[in-house]
Length: 331
Image 1 (cartoon, helix red, strand yellow):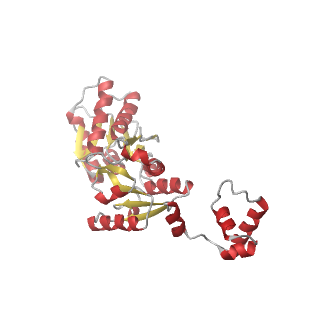
Image 2 (cartoon, rainbow, N blue to C red):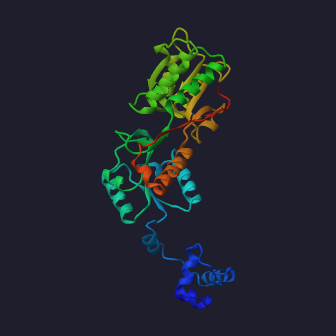
Image 3 (cartoon, helix red, strand yellow):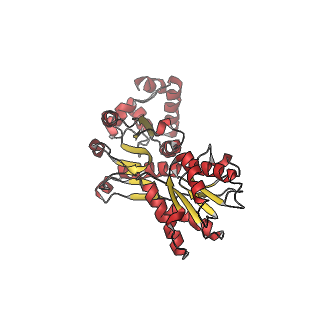
């Protein structure tokens, strides 16, 4: 800073005032221009750590994930978070823990040591999470997960609304018998999407039939479940699959049965996986998991908690993000 002051012919105080854009400093614009020219010529960069100590802000956010950073499916959460953070002059520090409890504890400790302004704690899929208690030392938002007592703010996909939207779309196209290939894991998506399925049927006065709901998993499960659905006495004219991998298996089964999509049977998937949904034939209509939007919301809400400490004592917001329908050619 002294070198900048000497080159610009001003005091160190003036340089400090210019760098920090101190209001009412009464520094002429020509003087400010000389200071900035000197800064550029010398390549001077203020010490971010020192400035953080003075302002009690480091303009950094810790982002702790389980395996998101190493998978292609949920990386949009990181992108959404990073884009919103960057637009607000915040830097994201990403730590991937690989689901190791020891690494989770160490990650929080390291972020606290580096005096980040807040933490986003994210999981790869919507589920109950158990973040280390130490995250409560800072403003923290849970992304794609929630804690048991809902005492931390969270953002998750609206699974019920998504299931409802998928089935309502098929009903609006004239379908009355709609199969649902559901997952067999005890997770919010399994229960929420089934609840949405039943809600849409009930609203349309269509009786729920247990034989139209088949529980299985992944691509082979989609194939086997579709074969079972299509062999019942009165098979469905449309089906909703828990994810796009199951829908891919359903496509194979329907093709082997000599059925055409969507003229013989309509199909809607879930996830909007970039490597699957647009590349099936015909391209798959699917519900999109709002990873990018959830990442943005997490940072936006975290910044509110950082800037307004009084909000931290309020009831933690539990936000549900709408899953958009991506219409292609299968329904």
